[in-house]
Length: 372
Image (cartoon, rainbow, N blue to C red; front, side, top):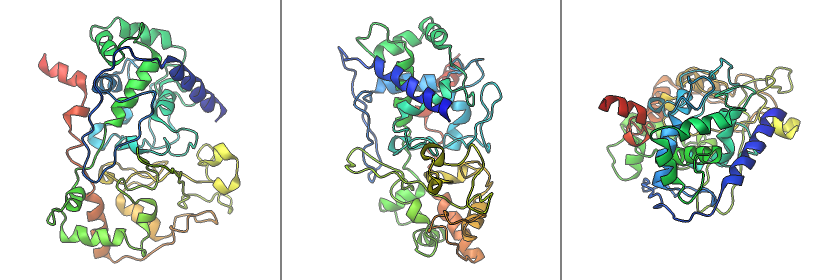
């Protein structure tokens, strides 16, 4: 973990060094938010603009941001799957496997902390350098190739103009720091709140079926305890927003492993313990958003649970390998088959189908190919 930490800190320094005072500010980004969503928090040194987000969209889908031109951010974060992939763990450009399941980028703008279990990674600007430049494992494999990618983008027909528009007043706008900043800006636009459940909250009583409403009651009941870790507008207790004055960071042990009878998790996947060294933190991971959960299988931090049915089995059993560290909210429960069907129906109501095809977030290179 030391190597990964050094990469994060080193790249964060690169990003920080490139923040300058703009001589001409582009138009600020206009949020289009569901009525029950707060405005996201945005770091002062990377303000949101439409131009920056559009540049980030291009970079997000560009395979040139990998060592061998085979991999982009979108390779492991596919829009039709709510910006996940359908793999237990993802594969990098050179064949290395990541240790964890690819998290959804939907509503990532509201994350308290980034990734499954890194309490140091506050902003997207901290996280994005890891897949770009990390070596343990290699994901996009750009470590040591910073000059090459800057030169390639600088010589492109389109990118210089996009960078100048997004970062006006900079003498050298095509830079590693601005690549990171632009991708972060694009990812913050991926806000999903147009599901049947959202329509129901907004007053459409017919938006949910009777089965989905029964499932909603189960989900928010003390009997099942789901809402304790997956509550709020984003269905996770790990959200923050622009008006938050007090941010608490939540991680949970859901009883996935107990290798030694004392709650040990597999090496390299031991949760925030890998940062704190405190045995009480063994197996503690972030509760991800449940928005669009029906299209983001497989589940859990290591992709070891394949279906929603199996997820329910896991929590109904109180975890598959309980230990003294397992969350008090993973206590087990009994469901009838009709109740199980209702609960799954409710989880399916959290799918925002418009988000899966929204052209604002789609591959701009595919659009160009269609025009040709």
